Image (cartoon, rainbow, N blue to C red; front, side):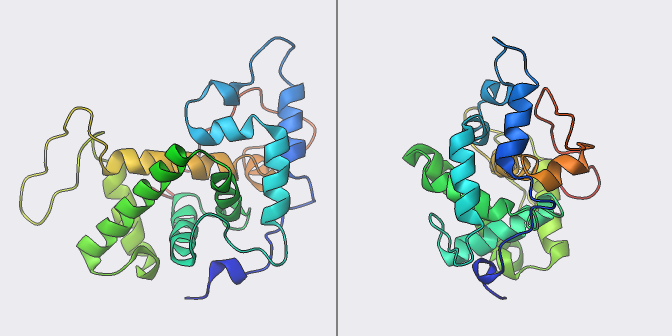
Length: 220
């Protein structure tokens, strides 16, 4: 598999970047009303509320000589495959690169949380198919993501014929890791011009709240 970091910089459609999209979102919210992005607890929403940070991350991610700043090559290839399985088209919008740039300036706690989630799916890929995530077929990746999305929070997948383990209070399970990674991908893709246009944005009107992923049936 080719190194995704060696691919050309992603196309941002007509050139309207995340900064313009998010500034438009800000202008569509009345004075004194909190930006909906900031109300969310997921780290990506906290990043997206900082338009200057978004601008820097996007500029860095579009550089012709770009290399992952936070993730190593294997981790980045895993993220790239994960993005495309969760939201088809998210790699074309540069979501994988954008996520890496945001993680590079995130807190150690959030960085560790992301790596733990990514590692959980790497472990699940090896447990099911004896291969790392990036070497799985699309169908195998979708199988794992679908199974993870159907688990209860705190639960782990079943192995063989053994009954599925019961969720443990306070435990972070594969479903929780799925939700965490999906939050990053949703935030990255739908803050891009491509993602917003998929939701009906015309370049003139802006959402007053941040949309969730609208792709039932296309990914886990």
